[in-house]
Image (cartoon, rainbow, N blue to C red; front, side, top):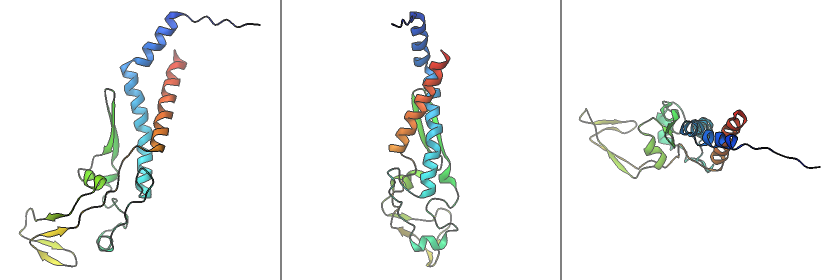
Length: 166
């Protein structure tokens, strides 16, 4: 017994065209973005970095003046995680302009009033300026093992679907 497979060159060309179509590359990256957003939101809810190490907890003084006792959830703006595909590039991040400070952390810095002459510091009173000790890094987005697996699965599923259509 033997099996003969008749594979026409035009079939091969059609498959190659579909796989290399730049629109399909963008759609594949969008599939990856769709898979990564919920993973990053879940980590945010659990207050862990992409490598699953816990975020540094809020200091008691910070907790006392917040309405929510968890890091980066006060306004919900840090949870505005989204993705953007441009050509063959996928970007994922938060649209909150303060996200970079929280993601990378900061060193100590001075806070000065912008519109008033003094600052009101809760529990301290009025001051011309305040010295902030800095923010610990709390990675808002990342690409770790779970992300890599989700990306690989999204791409495999996307291209399986294309191959099944050809």
